[in-house]
Length: 203
Image (cartoon, rainbow, N blue to C red; front, side):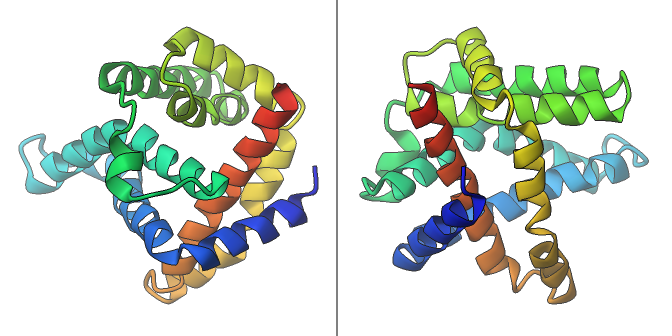
């Protein structure tokens, strides 16, 4: 696997279709706010405005993760028509929400065994939303197992890939998210490229 080549392909897909990638990026940024605020909100009263807002964002994250991933796959495969088609085509809402909730629970439980197992399992389950978005007929257990099979031997490379974006993340922080309007779509496109690579390798 040539990581540089995948990232170059990701840049090209973002350049060709920046507006839909920007849509994915903005929603991803907003939803990631829920994760970053989970610890903060735990110190607040459950009825506080911040806590309620974070809970709603967590729910939206469960609902939108797979549809947004479908948009990313369509853009990567060159079959994207419009956001509505990609978001709602072959939607299996109960399955997708249940799968992402289960993945979150599994990852949290592994994290309780120390941080490293949680990180490893996080990458092992990282392809689940892509698999669900790509195959409307696959079950939750099969998607989780397939993700673990696909990422076998590639978890370190996925970690390195994430670390390769650290300067982009720092630049986003220093520009109050302005750089993130390109960096997040670029990172999302790279992950989609990686999924396509792993899925073709797994055929």
